[in-house]
Length: 297
Ligand SMILES: NC(=O)c1ccc[n+]([C@@H]2O[C@H](COP(=O)([O-])OP(=O)(O)OC[C@H]3O[C@@H](n4cnc5c(N)ncnc54)[C@H](OP(=O)(O)O)[C@@H]3O)[C@@H](O)[C@H]2O)c1
Image (cartoon, rainbow, N blue to C red):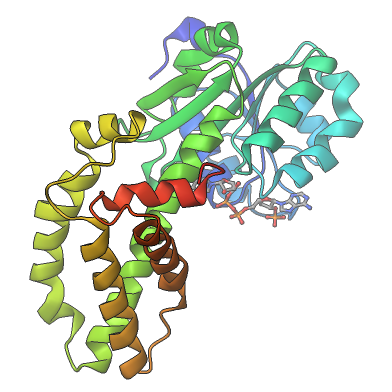
């Protein structure tokens, strides 16, 4: 919990699943909390816990010198805040809305132009984790603003982390982690489409999925030597080369076709591997396909 001198009024704009958790965390920590949401009624439970529910977002923003905004998109953030730029001048805006790094940078530029202290945050947690020590939230923007408000920011997550004065960096980390998640998730669903078609239940397969992730995938993707090799663009391997991985991808694609399962998502990955083999990198590590994804060929 924040110490008393760190307690000051906070306004929370947006009471979706995440905004509700954020407002509840501030209330629980003893911050006088004013909330606003487009659809009425979502603040009722918070009001019972002591929150002030504002009729308009302008009224909510006027109630505190610090606003936490958590809306569906940056477009909505601008739609709501741009007409109030004058009223926000001299205040602190903490934007926890997801979007792209460029959207974060443009919003920071807009805030700076209007003398609004701005931090952009990326929440790497789900609503029930908000307030927990393990909740990871990245921040970017002016370091002095982060330092001043760190105790208040930590109310939302014990693993609050300042990354960069570039306000786009938190979302870059966020999206990098998310694409890892969706890649794994898609692979997981594809695996179960194959298994289900082959008559194997998810429960039967679970111990082997667990072992595979625990002893192969996680160590592979979290190996410090692997991270260094990526940074050094070192694609040598004596473990598993591009030829082997290209063949494995071909086996999955052909088996999926035989089972009438859509494996289209693997075709571009197979194509990148095949391209690298054609270029003479068959003995290199699979990681070399990164060259086919970036401008470097
Ligand atoms: N939920 C998560 O697990 C999670 C995790 C990390 C990050 N986030 C991020 O947190 C942000 C909010 O997510 P959420 O889960 O709270 O989403 P949500 O439950 O769908 O809530 C969206 C919020 O945006 C508001 N909104 C949408 N369009 C609006 C408009 N035109 N004018 C005014 N308000 C508008 C909604 O108001 P109404 O209630 O009136 O529709 C609601 O308050 C997103 O950027 C999301 O990516 C969420």
